[in-house]
Length: 100
Image (cartoon, rainbow, N blue to C red; front, side, top):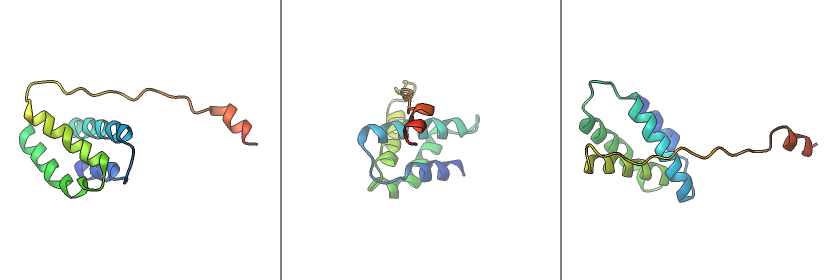
C-alpha cells in the first residue's frame, strides 16, 4: 500500500533533474522505512521496480527512484549516498507583509 502511495507522490510529471533526485531520495527513504523487518529486500525491491516501471518513461522522479533501487541491488551491503535537502527560507512573515 505504501509503495503505491510513494509512486503516486513521485509521479508529478516533468521536473528538473536536481528536484527529481531529491524527491526520489525521499521516496526511497519512505519506501525503505515502511518495509517490514522480516521482509526480503531483493523481492520487495523487484516488486517496487515492477510497479514503478510504467511511470519511469514520463516521470523523472520515479525513474530516479528506480535507479536508487537498482543501485542498491547491484551493490548489496554497500551504502547508497542519500542527501537531505538543504533548508531554505521562503520569506515567512516578511514576505507576507510585502504582499500587502
